[in-house]
Amino acid sequence: MNIPVLHQLALNESPYPPLPSVREAMQRAVAQAHRYPQFYPDDLTEWIAAWCQVSPDRVAVGSGSVGVALQLLQAVVEPGDTVAYAWRTFDAYPLLAAMVGAGTVPVPLTPDGSQDLNALLVALDHRTRVVVLCNPHNPTGTLITADALSAFLRQVPRHVTVLLDEAYVEFARGAQLPDAAALLDRHPNLLVLRTFSKAYGLAALRIGYGLGATDLVARIRRQQLPFGINAVATAAVEASLRAVDELRRRVDTVIAERDRLHHQLAAHGWHIRPGHANSVWLAAPDPVDEAAAALTAARIRARHYPGEGLRLTVGSRQANDAVLAALAGASRHAASEGGAPGTRHDGRATAVRHNGLRRAPVVRSPSAHDD
Image (cartoon, rainbow, N blue to C red; front, side):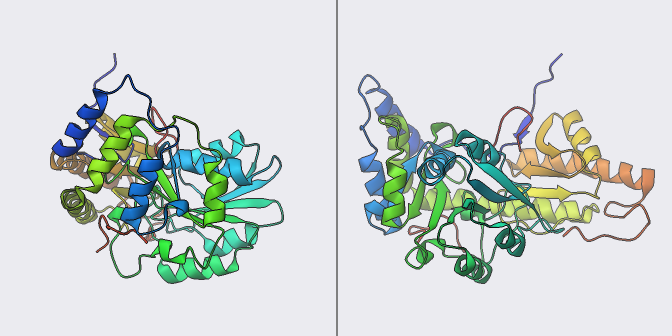
């Protein structure tokens, strides 16, 4: 018998439904559902460009950030080329590469869950057409700093396009956060990828966008599906761009809950590093498999990588309290069975290694892939 899930924390979704003003805009658009949307999403492109303070010819819009990523690969990759990325990461990257006939070059993360930029540079060769960076990283939440990103971009060969996936950037704070859009003039081979799925709570409507040099964006736009962006999603994004202050307060609440989860789990003995996404990452050798079982017993669905890690989406306060209760028990059980969490089998302790909604931002889950 299937037991209903009380808290769905596997897909890094927002715990909040669309704002009332956004729902009203969606309802007005639904009343015109018998009409086609724009052939190409010109109005949406112009709104995003004005919001990001760039010209419209530097914006590509697609079906979620993953849709824009696919358009990029279709534009620049030929069969036999390769796509490089750190692994583990978002499950869609190898799937998208396979869809365009590209080989994949997965580069292991560092022991602390960071993307190994030096190893990624070494992996680039004459067949590489795209290298993917995810910042903040999915699933570990680690951050590539501004200095590290600039140094990396200076060393990437010009025949390689850098796909910088910033799906979680609204949840990252601090002076070290790159201003990726400001790098576009210096790096015409850079595409900065964003989404309205996470911080804006519009995951089901599938709207993402990319910022890049005009030549690169023009190539990506040639892969745009006619009538591919529906009118309800367009209306929701337009309304969301008018409600940035309300959405920022929601993001602040998610960040506060993320920090609360981090501190209380650490107090229970879990070894976690600070993360910069809307999730918390638990990594082996902490008892992540036991934690997954405890969450399942508590009817909480998280993103479990057996023997490797556990990604917990930050949910509502009630959901987060349920997580803390379940994992406190798992931590105590693991300690009684074989030592404190974060301790190697030989007994040695192991360290598991104010941006907000800017007006001008210039894997497989148990049942589905996450974006």
